[in-house]
Image: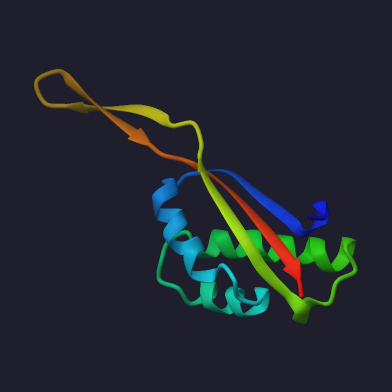
Length: 112
């Protein structure tokens, strides 16, 4: 696998489970078809995933000299990133703990 056919998004403020649902829908498709699908998807982070796919496509066409119509999304790795631990002040001088989840996304493209 060539290095210039990838792109990475680090520390996205979305849980890895939610991002994996979006990523599963576009794996195996042509890169341009995946971008069209992600643009009109009602999920919050579909546009962020579209940016990563667009970046990987630009890396493949500019640095790798590949034809954009022959590029497919081979795989998308979504892994868990470090969590943000926060507190919220609630009644009677108490605090409530909550966690903000983050994820890493790595897109691999392939030329057919």
